[in-house]
View: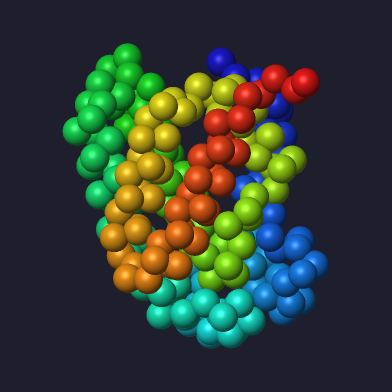
Length: 190
């Protein structure tokens, strides 16, 4: 049984998004990102247009991806369950159902911050210390990274099908690749 205090500390320290601290972004954009991330929500249409006007990213792309988030995460979930049905069966890493639901919520949250990164045109968007805490948290509670990697890789494929521009597809790809690289870093420090 995990220690509640350790668990609370890890949860509090786990932070994916880091671009809200990037001083090369306009202060207004950083504030929008900070608030939206703290509230763990998508961006409003006004926020999208503000950020995209600064980054020269097509606001319609950001709005489209954000509007498709639930559907894309559901499709990635279905793919994972077809590929690895044992994960949600008794003894599987995503059993009982509460663990599976937490995994799908994490996928949605990862996609949410990738949409932020895309809007800002910042594919290197993570917070190094926060990601270290997230990796530690995942190891502590036994999150099945193999399954999460499959779901996120599928989410990458699905989201790239939603964009027409090779530049936009490349930005999405870079953002997903960065996240996957950060999630899978070895916890061992050299």
